[in-house]
Length: 275
Image: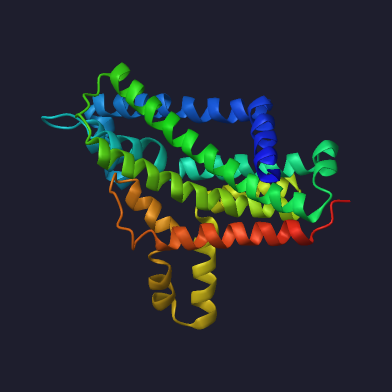
């Protein structure tokens, strides 16, 4: 019962916090703006040629937004608008990190989690709340992408419901992994700045890139280290950004990261001082 009541309390604060809606509003606004800019570039042949010659990402996005007969695939369009480039991962990781760092600085919350059992319940409810945030961001992103496509004249193909829902679930799971890492930092430091910066670096895959570069230099075997990281989160998010549903085996690093991050958060809350 403690976990249920703690979860309800955390969700209540989430909904009542202005920051929740500011983050979600900015994230949602990015999607029609991005699609509008892509359509603007696609309408000017000289600008489109210059852009595609300097950016393979833009060339790929233009190919998704200017489909042939049958219309654009919604999962590919969503991937281009808010998955590829780690947009959703960065937004959610930063938001969750800042929200829980701020939450733990609140006197009323500190009074609620004095006992070890209460701290365990808080860690579990924090993970569950982060999961709800991830699902909401994927749903809002998909809805905003579809609405923006209709508004800008991008014809959409009728999606396969099972395939599209599987893709959405995988994007949510991957985003959940990133958000839990940021939540762990928030629980450990209670620092708004550290949580925001860490969330941004984690969501943008900067930490992964720095880690495998450093390990490659230290070990003297950069290619072997790179291959070790080839199946990790940044690679998976780039594949999902193409609208590709991943195999269960490919998602193993996501599951491992989620389990490890939840365990770490529980351990942190069990040991840390709230003074």
